[in-house]
Amino acid sequence: MSLVESTAAFYQRCDEITSDGSLRVALDAQEIKNHSAMAFTMGTPQMPPSDEQFNLLAQRVFGANPTVGQMSAIRRIHFESTTLVVSTIKEKVTSDGAEKGDATKRIPLAEKKQRREDQLARLSGVTMTGELDPSHMLLDLANQIHESGVIVWLAPSKCSKRDDEVQMSLKDSKSSVQVENSQLKVGPSIATPEAHWDTELKFQWCMMRRGLALDQCRVLSWHVHQHWLNYMLNLLGRPVNPGFQGIKIDQLVRADREMWTLLAQEVTGSLKMQGTVIPLDGHVTRLSTDPRVTMLLLPLPSSQRVTDAGDKPKPAVKPAPRPTPKNNSGKRKTRAERSCPEELRNYTTKVAAGQICWNYNLKDGCQLSTSGKPPKCTRGLHMCACCHKVGHSAVVCREAKKG
Image 1 (cartoon, rainbow, N blue to C red):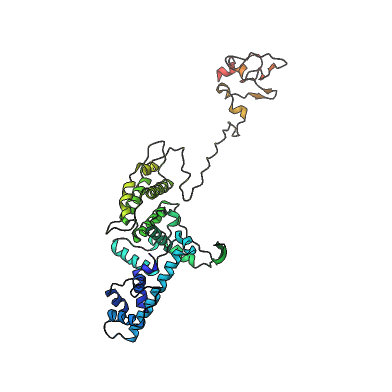
Image 2 (image 1 turned 45 degrees about the horizontal axis):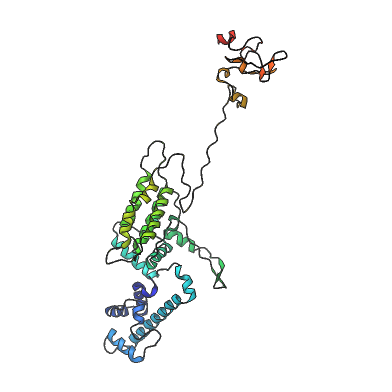
């Protein structure tokens, strides 16, 4: 909602002009509730009204014989209203305004305050303080969806709280250079707070702040958004079958992003309320059980990890290195010891003369030719792996049979 259409901003300005509230009460009785209506009470903003028109308007608002102060108040509020309307229309038709068409439309502070009070009166049991106090930036993003009719996904990182916004505004802002319409413009760089959702509790707070912001701007009802959030959070503690891992927060974010993507594809009508019904409520309720969304909330196999949540990808965890096997002496086994046959694991197959032939000490024996003393083939020494004597193998060794 723009400044010229805000009733709360108009009433606040009327009370600033007349501290007793007489101007606001009188204009409200004539059904003049915003700057836009006030600007067109006499002629058009491009044609200044005459003194006679001001007198007639003052008489209809305040009654016969209005005072000089009442005439001054009427002239002042009318001048400000026409100036705001002309400025708003000019911004829409100029090139600068066209470029800013996709920019976030901020809600007037008086309008935010009024909406907050109305929401607290409408939602019983909800306290909008601390972690549940949406930032002004989040409210402006929700308002942009309502005013433009273009559905976008509000990621958890954008659902910041008011406390972070206040603390960030206390820091000194730095100047930045930007290029607009082939011109260099120097202005303060606007820092936006970023919400953290790395734990289940922080994720819940982020989503609840988003639900309050959407409800305050009448984009989506609080109870519909909370029902979808509770459905996702209940999956986090649900037991899974063996061989599967539990539901992760990244999966909830992916499912939520997919729902809003489907909403942007399927909802083409107006997002503004029709009487007391919010059009987006029915679509969210329907898509919360859509297979295209619920399939992203299924348990994944233990060997599969979610690597892309669409907002803040989590770093992959490196597998732990396998421990190196050790021998009886406590030292790490060599490659030869690790590949030794099972029948010879208890024997020492390496002596001072060299490596003992494994095949010679097995049941089938070694068929390779030997030479030298002790006899040796290309695979090693032909001697007993048990007693280390020449002439027999471990298969017929008496010492091996005794063991």
